Image (cartoon, rainbow, N blue to C red; front, side, top):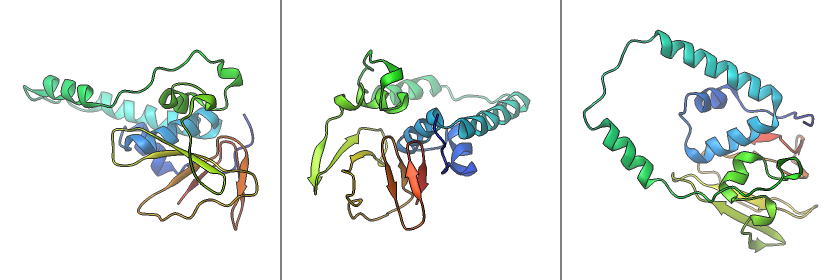
Length: 174
């Protein structure tokens, strides 16, 4: 593991541990956790607290159609490519992203967006998206707006903004 300097907030880790994040954010959080010992430990603590709370809570009655409704949600979920048998030790993409891509970086379906920048949109079940960006060294991040929270996680290389440098595993919350 490298020296990750930019971490997820407790609120994001707690929401992830509770299963409350939209799928797209969950992919980014799970990927950061797979790279960051500190955030993984914090997440495990939140999961332990959640487990203790569940074990202390009373029994909840389920509706008669609960199983059918759950199975319908499973059936409606998008298909995700089967992971390839690549060597995780030499993989560029961490396991949570490889799961969505169906392999390592060579399996990504890149589309050019201009100025040498390429992107791939990973299919998730929600309205939020996961975008992989390949930005050449020295190039700027493409102009984009923020209609809500945005998580940027560096998977390879590094970038610098006005305030700091972000390298593999670092996450920027905007």
